[in-house]
Amino acid sequence: MSVLELRGVSRVFGHGANGVVALDGVHLSVEAGTMVAVMGPSGSGKSTLLSIAGTLEKPSGGEVLIDGTRLSAMSGREQARLRRRSIGHVFQDYNLLAGFTALENVTLSLELDGMSVRRARAAGTAALDRLGLGHRASSFPSQLSGGERQRVALARALVGDCRLLLADEPTGALDSGHGEAVMRLINAACKRGVAVVVATHDAQLASWAERVVFLRDGRLVDQTAPPPGPESLLLPVTSGR
Image (cartoon, rainbow, N blue to C red; front, side, top):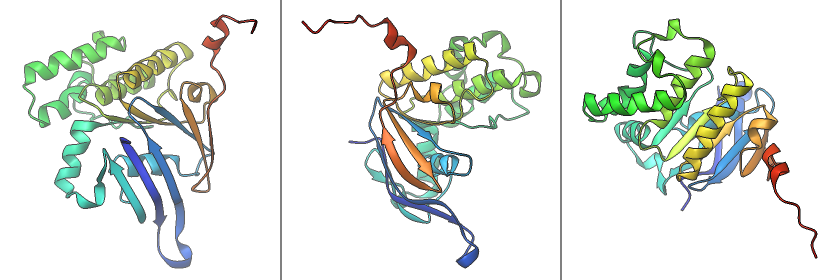
């Protein structure tokens, strides 16, 4: 069963002749343990697709299913619980709470879902440590660089029992070294069974995915396996004899 399935999903902003079509009949299925990269020019619908997949926006048409359950059959409260428990988001603009420390931003969803403060802090600290931010746990977002804020956002997305990770340009604010570290963590989550959808302009980031889909003017126009990544050069060459 797919963790995420979009069936003919459309999204139109506005009404009548002045309506803007952001998505137009998109079909997409993402299995557990699979990473799908969504590529396309700015304005092609990538961010809208992630918002709808993560229950943050409602489609104008079509169906969204998570673990086989139609979102349209769920109440707002049930969808909020699903977001806290099963869906991790990494946004382009981080969406960190200014009045909370890095650690508090990471642990908030765990505490809202009933986890004790002590357990949540332990899980949050471990998540920040994995991203090289343990020493910044008590810092506020205004005291962090753009790259640090992006890594805090990723720690927040991965800290719980995440089934679906939705990442919008997750390495956009990072240098190449930290960008690779972030992709390795996302890849490790994928190998643990998390379904991952990454929206990106970066072909190198997309090379981590098992499948790449292309959006243009809100339509899914093509999908393919990415070219081999740089690590493929290390594979032994056989003569075929």
